[in-house]
Image 1: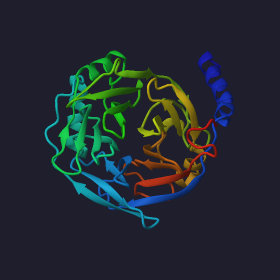
Image 2: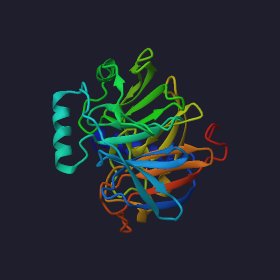
Image 3: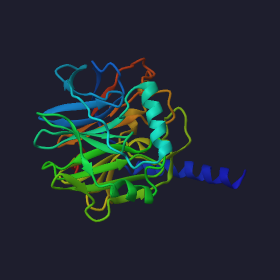
Amino acid sequence: MTPRVVLLCLLLALLPTARAAVPELELLSEHPIDGMPTGNLSGLAMCRGELWGESDRDDDRVYRFDRSGSVWQAQPQVFNTPAAPASGLALDIRAAAWAAGFVRGGAHDFEGISCDDAGNVYLVSEAHAAVLQVPAQGPARWLDIDPAMVRQAREAGLLQKFNAIFEGLAISPDGNRLWLAAERERRGLLALVRQGSRWECDGPCVLLSQDSELMAPDGLQQRFPLHVDFSDLALYQGKLFTLERNAYSICRRDAQTAKVEACWSFAAAALVPSRQYQQPYGLTEALVIDASGAWVGTDNNEQPRNDGERRPVVWRFKAPAAGWMGTP
């Protein structure tokens, strides 16, 4: 065997032991969603006491979910989206995003949703590397973000590839601090602080920039190395929680340094054969953390699961025995 094959075999042999140290979350329920015509659930947030979500194919609406039954009903809230600001992204990335939006819909490619205590909804646009604020009352507007944010991100190796820009965001309850998750190749976490009407870097914008590969977990129908990634971001009790799609895990991180403190796996539930999709990578893109558990949503890219389910699906996981602030 070649040295590369030998190394791959060694990694495969070691992987089950490494994963065994990460505790598994218990799946309590799953909920298909009706009423999202475009599907593609790409974010969840607890807003105004209700669970809300958004689709990366919709540029003019978010959805409140009626959770009174096992199948949820999506109820749209429509708004007008103003023209997007200049992004600071490379020309080839902007051109690819425009072409993708023209062909498949979703010119802004909203990939994350969060809310503050005043009832403002925030959406992050992957196409423009920008954040839209949708107030409870009044018109939607794009946040005035210091261009240094995108510049620092690109200097750190982030935001280099089309469809691998921002995938999640979290806002502090008072609406004064904002965190963004760069998706992959490289993945990263960034922080901004509000200064009047402008959002600026409070010191370095980039808290984390990293890239490595991991092997898809046992039980996946196709297995090969995948890039580490972030597919959503949540803030709970002052900690950042990252949805790490290709690792099938949720990790707690320090909000100031992005250092990982604890992780929990949901692979056992996600990789039940009937719940799998004919895709070689993870599809979870939406995360909410609360005291009693986690909501995790799937962007199925309009593809059916092995059991034939074509609607977006949200899973409810039980909180760890020691709580989200405890040590696994």
